[in-house]
Amino acid sequence: MIDFKPIELEDKARVQKYTLTSGRRNCDLSFANLYSWRFLYLTETAEAEGFLMFRFRVDGKLAYMMPVGEGDVRPTINRLIEDASSQGEEFQMLGVCSDMRGELEDAFPGRFNFESDRDYADYIYLRSDLATLRGKKFQSKRNHINRFKANYPHFEYRPLTASLVSECIRLENLWCKANDCAENEALQNERRSMQAALQHMDELGLTGGVLHVNGEIVAFTYGAPINETTFDTCVEKANTNFDGAYAMINYEFANRIPEQYTYINREEDLGLEGLRKAKLSYQPEVILEKYTATLK
Image (cartoon, rainbow, N blue to C red; front, top):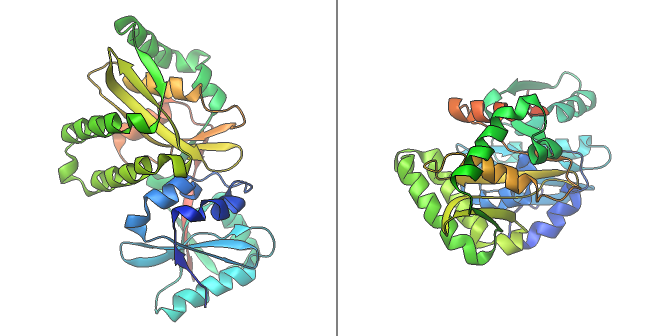
């Protein structure tokens, strides 16, 4: 029996002991995401045999993540399989990236089926690309930023602090009205996750920024580390009445993410055509495919 317990704020140091030193770059391992989405996934954690494990629910079904740690993963995977069986559930692991798939296939030859879903692939960028926008491939992005600067010469970028959270919530309310959040369960869930994260931004170690024009908030963003070289941008919202606000907050924030982070993970597109187009337009270094692993 594995002693799984619901994830709490005080688990941050224990979780990051494993995740920050891991080579994994998927956004699922950002502690800010793990905590702020716990209401939806009922996320639980446990430690055993040098590995950190996650158990959660998706659409009512039990699921696990690939254990994080060093050493022979086979005993730990077998324990997870037994855990699922003890609850009368079929075993499945979600968010299995390509390197994890290879690890599983080596450890359990021919035992797993793998199914990918492009809608949940992470977009990973070079921080230096987003911070400089150099080269012909980013000409359109530089044009957006130059128009924003020309139209709003007195704009101000400010680091996100607790005193600015109420402004961010106010912009989110406007964004939700414009995007019919009340009719979209996924957007309602995102809103709840965002509010949980902002409520505990200091405890979660969030870094973010707010864009003002004439004292009015027009965009905000925040994120947190996944590992020692990859930073996760969890949320980015802007008032589209201000042309170029999205491009500007993206650019300003990328310039303030510490240089230790080679990569920025800007998460999935969820199959939304406009979001996919926008994420591709920033020329990702990697589109990180994820698989669901089930027993044959």
